[in-house]
Image 1 (tube, helix red, strand yellow):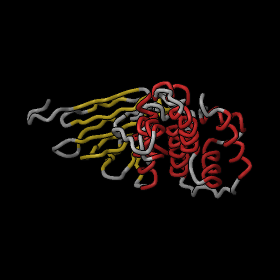
Image 2 (image 1 turned 180 degrees about the vertical axis):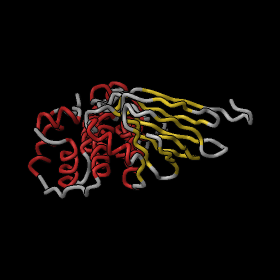
Image 3 (image 1 turned 135 degrees about the vertical axis):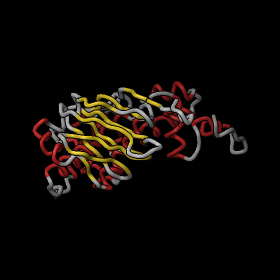
Image 4 (image 1 turned 120 degrees about the vertical axis):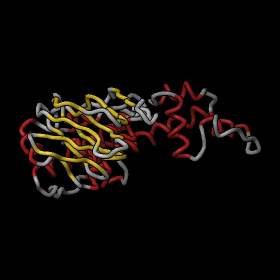
Length: 277
């Protein structure tokens, strides 16, 4: 707690998403980072206030819709650029998709005023706060990597032709692995395709991303089980959801009702139950 009573806060965790070493959310007012370096790429957005830092003897700042990418092994510091501090969200990324050969580009241009990148980073953070959304998080991360590579190189993204055959092959893979699931990395290896290309081909062909299709298939599997009297907890385990709340969240999002109310409707149209079931 600082002098005016405001509490500085930190939350950190390691998600089960390949490519993300750590997620770090913090609210700082008085804390000042000394010069230090990381083994990972540091992808930073600031939700409130502003941050200033020195990188390679040059001063930079992050605020608003600016995204900052600090390269590994390069020393930097950091502190609030306003009196009321800052609130930030950080992803520490490994080198699988952003190789060390790009460090020089990032040193020269560590900040991006790019609305698309900022939107993708915010959406990924929102996904990472929910358990059971690893495929969605991996898909969003792949698109972030793709955008960062284009921005670092200063190139426009290459135009890609529609690939319906690849999209249908991925759909077949998702249908075959609906319950046990499949990671984006594994799907890319099996189909001999770039993860980003997989996501885009699927979206163009079917009008939704792969993770959304997989969730809808799991909800379809859950419906007859619920109507047959199986408990929502057992249905969640049988259909690939992380847990019962995970099932409830997506079931209600797709069908407009909870599993409990849906199951009770089998007893007759006159009976109703709470939407909290």
